[in-house]
Image 1 (tube, rainbow, N blue to C red):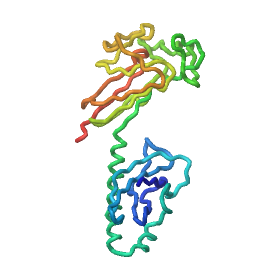
Image 2 (cartoon, helix red, strand yellow):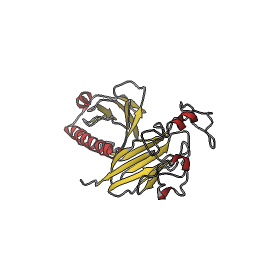
Image 3 (tube, rainbow, N blue to C red):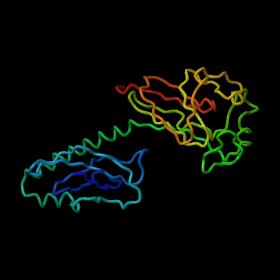
Image 4 (cartoon, rainbow, N blue to C red):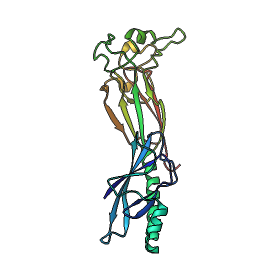
Length: 262
């Protein structure tokens, strides 16, 4: 059986499935990866007597726009824990409820740790559509930077190397992860970019954008990451890893990998 229980944004929520009491753990469900209300999906298996329950899966999902407070979808009406205890006919049932309450809480806390192991890097720009961007144009639906403005921001009289328009960037530009974590990279801009691992930051594959920079050796033959496309990075060793766009070399990111045992 699969039950979806909207627990709202609070912790320690009581709910009951098929006369069986559970409580969400006293930890916040919200973090940087989730906003709005949170749905707790619980898959429950029972034995032949339908008296013994065991949790085999817990999943959190973002659920915007729903009322705060516990609700149950596709299941009998929810009962609060006091109501459940009043209906319990034996001490054994209450012991089952206490056991599974702790079980649910422990697995949800574990799930929070698993969710935190996924990290995102977004490749961004702010090109204005139909503003003479040349080859491949600009595929953003909305943007505010013309090609003239982009060129005006390339250089500064106070610097000998390219500065570049700051709307062309990696977000975040500095990321700390643990060994074994996955980094999801997505081009959310309107122009072609790359996210290339380099030994040292340097210039890219477009000479006009390399003012004052020697090209990074890794940028000699790198495929583009078109707008909307994404990929995953796994298996990074402990230490610092440098990534840059080989078309716009001021777009850089440093990923620091920590030993998960530290």
